[in-house]
Amino acid sequence: MKHIISLYLLLLSVLSVYNATAQYGVPQFTRQDTLRGSVTPERLWWDLTCYHLDVRVNPSDSTIRGTNTVFYKVINPSGVMQIDLQAPMKITAVTSEGKALDYSREGNVYLIKTGADQEKGSVCSVRIAFEGRPKISSRPPWDGGFTWSKDSKGMPFIANANQGEGASLWWPCKDHMYDEPDSMLISVTVPEKLTDVSNGRLRSVVKNKDKTKTFNWFVGSPINNYGVNVNIADYAHFSEVFQGEAGALDCDYWVLKENLEKAREQFRQAPMMLKAFEYWFGKYPFYKDGYKLVEAPYLGMEHQSSVTYGNGFKNGYLGTDLSISGWGLKFDFIIIHESGHEWFANSITNRDVADMWIHESFTNYSENLYVEYYFGKEAGQEYVIGTRGNIRNDRPVVGIYNVNYEGSGDMYYKGGNMLHTLRQIVNDDEKWRSILRGLNTEYYHQVVTGSQIEKYLIEQTGLNLQKFFDQYLRDTKIPVFEYYVKGNELTFRWNNCVRSFDMPLRILVAGKSLNINPKQSFSTIKLDTQDAEIKVDPGFYVGTLNITGN
Image (cartoon, rainbow, N blue to C red; front, side):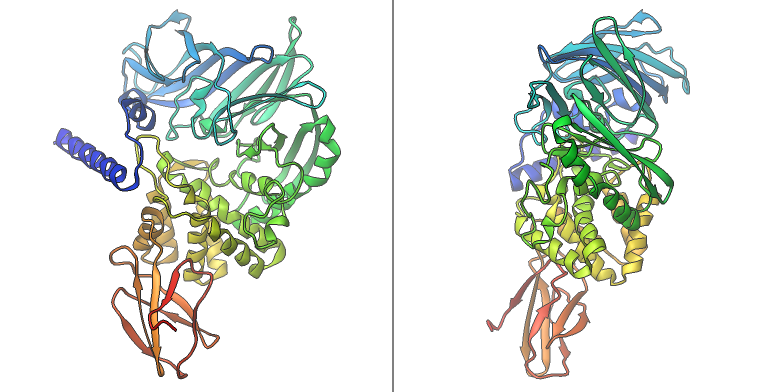
């Protein structure tokens, strides 16, 4: 019976991929996509507990080499372990307790023969040696890889960014979001005049005889693979302590020496961000590991407890306002957005990249909450509404499961406007804030599915929101409120929406607020005025059509 159910679920998955491919033109998927994007039997039998990544970075020839020791707990004994590492990187040896293990390669997947004599519940380890010249990113952070650049004095300025391609682009790991190590030691060896900044707290710096230094960073919290980073430069450092909800939080800032004074001024926004987001979302999730902003040779990314920054020490997004509302120039986009990911991406992490909206929709929405916290509710609403011009409605926000395929880039602006619309439906600001804080308590340091987040929001709001999520996450159409006024009667319905879509709406009748419940068939209500002007509350992300043509 189990085999029949498995075949049935596989068939549903195949049909889903086929339908999406036909309707939205997504690529044809390969076995490599399945090996990367699914929880294969070679991944499922072992639970990752800790990594020790020990890597030497060589600026002179753009190569890296090192080892990753993988500690794991045996769930169900099996003889083969899947480890991922993408070409041109390669594994050169695998050992366990000093004994060499056999392995084979299939594309970007290595299958390691661990032997079947490991007992259930036991904690074991394998040490994986690797080397190579990792892919160079042509457009970081959107195109994953390493960036090998120099500062104004000709000193190396190096960093990685690999959210889309995955951590296996440069180091061997279990490259699937569903399993995170409980802790991680990151040891990075660089030329002696350089500094490496990675995730967590700096435990030690070891001077080596070959004119190199090894920086040992320890992460005491679960960490997703793509959040692991190296940042290598001739850095200057300054710090401060933020008094937050969980006590004293160490905040460290690492920038090129030439930008130190600029950073001292611009990074004042970091504690402002922490204050606003702790108000909306609850305590910063990584007090144990601290908070860092690290200058990088690209725009920036949400590396856990080591947020990278390259926004030119100015407000906006490279000096522009993505919302075209004016409010986007009141804050540094990279400090606020990428740090918002500490709550949504690094603490609450999507299990499958198809649900990456959990990361990006909430973090996009955090931008307008930041604006609201410092400039008022009306300013926050103007900001999020202003971002609607960036929505394409090209394909669904939710991607395709088990093949490492994310949804539309609309997960940012459309996702943020979906959440803003939901706030209008809840229509209780304190309740809404408690829901956001509750999310970060319920799923603190957890890997979750999109359905879990949807279910939580449904339960906490007490509203039947399933069709609401189907509309905004799984369809490209935007619901249209159609209406006409005749005398003192208003007739209306929802159109251009998924079947059984049912969302309450707030409208303005001659300037006065009125809550209504449109269906997909026409309804008529009496108004207090004749031939009143009707407007939809702009907080709702919907279309409007007066079908009388007036």
